[in-house]
Image 1 (cartoon, rainbow, N blue to C red):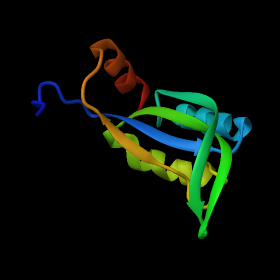
Image 2 (image 1 turned 30 degrees about the vertical axis):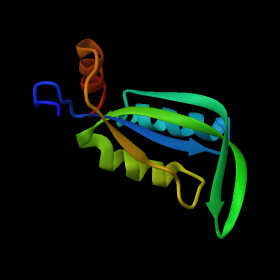
Image 3 (image 1 turned 30 degrees about the horizontal axis):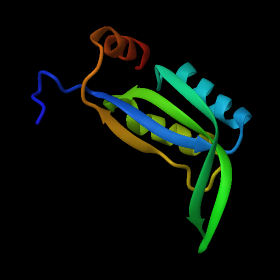
Image 4 (image 1 turned 135 degrees about the vertical axis):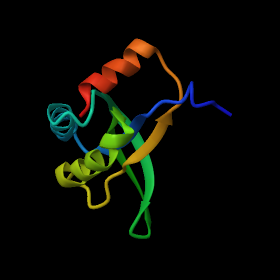
Length: 111
């Protein structure tokens, strides 16, 4: 178990988008609104999922978003607002440890 000394208030948030244009639109909006320090766009992933009772396949773009606990609820709302999907993915993972200068940069970049 990690002690408070090693725990952080940073998060990695994952979402997917249908196109590169949509990915860039979401990424730019999140960084411009200072809800994210950085968004990596991983192109052309293959997704297999169940939707409305059928197994579907799609080529998507994965967004890897760096943010803080305090900004997460606003970031989640922004994804819902900006996204074309009826039910956009928004999964938050705690960043337990990391490079102190990088974690500070996230803090300085997100409000």
